[in-house]
Structures are given as C-alpha cells and as structure tokens.
Picture 1 (spheres, one colour):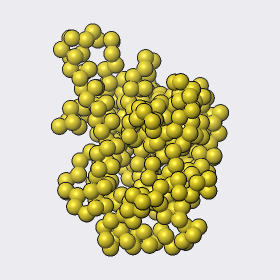
Picture 2 (picture 1 turned 90 degrees about the vertical axis):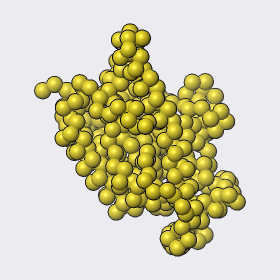
Picture 3 (picture 1 turned 180 degrees about the vertical axis):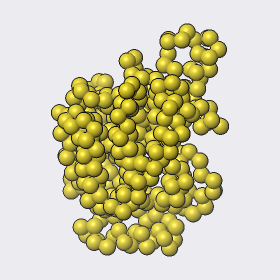
Picture 4 (picture 1 turned 45 degrees about the horizontal axis):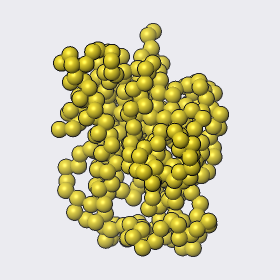
Length: 345
C-alpha cells in the first residue's frame, strides 16, 4: 500500500488543543498516512512534541500513548487562569471566577490583569505548564528520527517569531510557546538563531502556527491545518467577555491569514506561469476544524482543562478527522481540498 506523506500545522488554544489530540489520535489509525513534519504553537507545540517523542520510541502506538499521557497530565493541572495562582490563598477562587463570569459576562481575571501582573508574586510564581513539559524525554523530542518538529514563540522585545527546532526545543521553548502574558511570566530561552538569551510570549501573536518552516525542500506539498480558533463568528460579540475573546481570536488568527495570503499569491503566480513550476512550494492545503463546537465554548474554558472538556474535545477531533478522511482522504498526495482564498474572503 502506498503511503502519503503530509505536514501538520497545529494551532494553539489552551485546553481546546485537546481537539487536536483527537485529530492526531484518528490520523494514527491511518497506516497510509505518514506525518513528515509538524509546526505547532502553544497546545499545538505540546501535541507535536508528544506525537514526535512517541513515534520515535514506539511508532504509532507509542505516539498514541504519549498523547494520552500528555492530556492526562494537562487534566491534572487545574485552573490556569489568574485565579490559579491565587488558589493557595483563596481555595474557592476558581468557583468564584466561574460564578462571576456567568452572572456579569465579564472576566474577573481580565479586570485584575489591568491592575496586577504575574510578576506580582515574584520568584514565588510557578509556571503551571512546568510539570507538563517535565514529562517529556527531550532526547526523543529533539531526535533526528521521526517527524520534523517546529515550535513557535514570540520574542517579547522585537515582536518577531522564533522557530525552535532540533536541539533548540527545550522545556523552556515549549513553555515559551504557550506563555500567555496576562497569566504567565515571560519565559527566558536562547534565541534559536542568535543564541542570545531572550524573553518569549505565546507564539500565537506571531505565528499560529507558522507555515513557512513546512516549505522546506524534502517536505511534502500536502499541508493539513488543524484549526481550533474560529475564523468566523456569526454573532456580534456584545458582553465585555465576548468582545475580549473575539479580539484575542482575531489577533491569534492574523498570522495564519497572512501565511494563507502568501500561499494564495504563490499559487496564482505558478498558475499564470510567472513563476517556474518547482521554484517555490505549491502547497496542497487541507483543513480540519469544528467551528460550530469552538463557537459554543467559553473563552475561559481554554484555561480550564477539566477531564470532561478534554474528553469532549478529543471525541470531536476524531469525528472531524473521520469526516475529513471520508470527504477528502482520496485527495491527499494529489491536490489540495481548501482554496486559501476561500478562507480569506
């Protein structure tokens, strides 16, 4: 049986990244599909690291087990909102936050972030993702074997994207990729290009995820984007919480839309003959998403990885991948199934 090689672009979105867990779990059932490379941001980077490390040590079964272990660990982290680092002082902070949001449709941690910062606790602050990344064996995450892995973070000082790969993928790089600045202190890690120590925030501000690392020669043309941030919301947000959530979604989708415009531009030049075929990557684009589900989830659920939510999202990811494979599986290795301009219109 012939094997189709694909690249994966995995978006970030906190606990909503469990949807991508389900997507990867379902793709592992397809022995005719091989993942050649992964570009991931935030939860997408964590999923990519688990997938790669598992593939290196145990093939498909190893990747599935590593993903299961990752999300079992995430499910034990608890509330990662501002209330999470208040919990030692105020054990009922999470419940109070939920009650406030449901009653007033505003975010108490959002209000507090205008007056306080994660730096208020100084050295006492602990990154809630530290135990998650500590579970990885980085000799496997950074190995030459298995799919290529690219982890995206945003340089705080320059605003530019940093793409960590190979030996540059450290625990700090993974935590940097998922560092929401209103909830986490910036993560210090060496710049993957200059080697200079830099401060990093969530990669979603500069690439969610970055697609350009997947254009390298030797990597396949097929690129599957696993999207967990809705591009389209039918309803106009009205409450403060809804407005802030949509602002964040638009901000985190902007880098992806930029990359889609670049793909569309290159495809037009190739089709018109203005670029010689083979001179640039002619990306065969695909998309796996469930916007109706994501539109129905609250913004705060991204930082509240309850086991029930994670299980719901994993099941949804498997179902969305089932639908994709039934509808578009035969196109893999032949042509794209999404027109990038259709996502931009």
